[in-house]
Image (tube, rainbow, N blue to C red; front, top):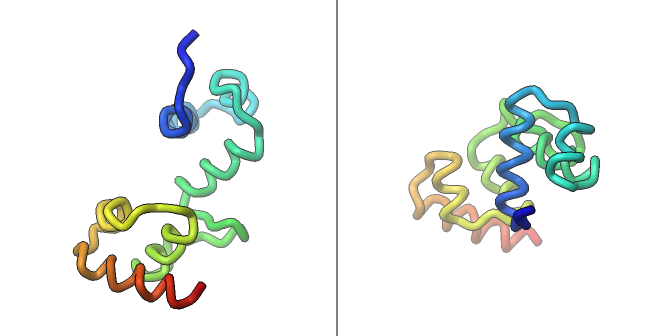
Length: 98
C-alpha cells in the first residue's frame, strides 16, 4: 500500500468526487475523515466555510479567500488567471486585514 502525502490525497479526493463517488466511498479509498473530504469538496465546488457560493464573487474576493485558506501567491495567480503583481498587491491587502 502506497502512503500518499496531503497533496496526493487531495487530488485523489477531487478525482473520486468528479467520478461521482459518494463521501463514504471516498473516505474508504483515501482513508480520510468525512469532514476533511467535505472541506475539499466544498472548496473545489466553489463554496467557502460558511456555505456561501464563491462563483459569483469577484476575483479579488476569491483571492483573499484563497489566501485565508493557505494558498501561495503563485497558486492564486494561476487559479484565478491574475497577473502576479496584482496578486502580490492583494496579498498585502490580506496581510493588512489580519
